[in-house]
Image 1 (tube, rainbow, N blue to C red):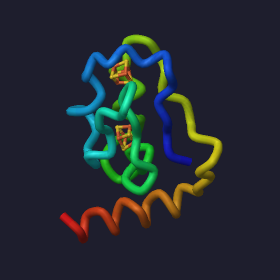
Image 2 (cartoon, protein in one colour):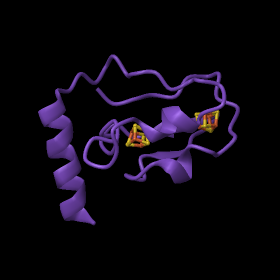
Image 3 (tube, rainbow, N blue to C red):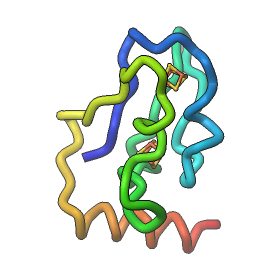
Image 4 (spheres, helix red, strand yellow):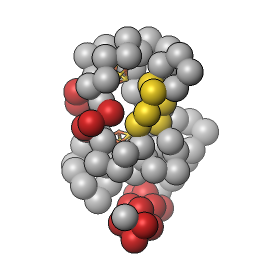
Length: 83
Ligand code: SF4
Ligand code: SF4
């Protein structure tokens, strides 16, 4: 699963620089996570960095994107090849 940002986001911009995959950007109303780039931080860190830094705890798992650990790792490897 990737993560998602809910409407409780206060647009504080703390999570965007914390993401190792550049998956977070400002959306039309609040910050958003690109599911094609979020690996739940698999490959970089033991825990999702955005969740750690968010002051309002508004970054749950995205139920629309169910992925196994191996799929997240494959996404990480694909992103590394692109960079
Ligand atoms: S879980 Fe990690 S990869 Fe996904 S958006 Fe948050 S910081 Fe970025
Ligand atoms: S850290 Fe949380 S509140 Fe701040 S911009 Fe990111 S999702 Fe929104």
